[in-house]
Length: 85
Image (cartoon, rainbow, N blue to C red):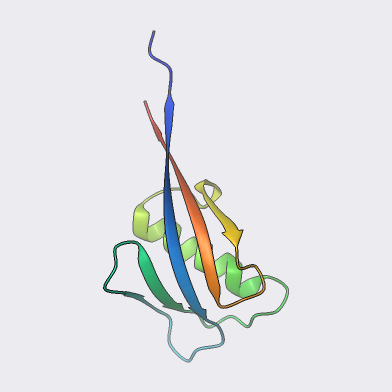
């Protein structure tokens, strides 16, 4: 019987809330992005949308994307949990 193993990936994000257009730009380094979202930085709306965009990009459920740092700043560190069966 083989047990599930978890892999963790870390993604750095520079957030631009309340933008006119939503976009996700990759930086020169791997797993570093600038993400512009239409939502305001109020009541966690921009953070929720950033998690959704990262989840879609990496093809994982939103529940597998966790914000570790940067809840109130533009610079954020996200953790993506990938379960290998």
